[in-house]
Image (cartoon, rainbow, N blue to C red; front, side):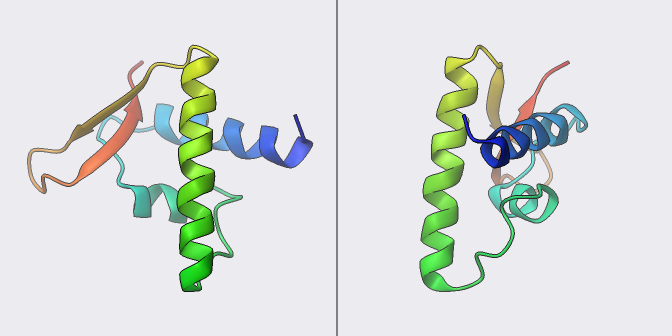
Length: 82
């Protein structure tokens, strides 16, 4: 695994462990280094594909990534329960 990808996955895990609430895709994009720099429409699509691959890889590694929504906004999001 490339060092950049490993660092991005680790940053994603840290971000999702550090919150109790579900974070939306946009909140994750803004908070996790490695997902920035995709501000064009093509970049948005690249980010979505990268995020989907990262979620799948974390699940394959046994990271208990949860999907749900917060009661106050109802937007779908992600977290890792402690």
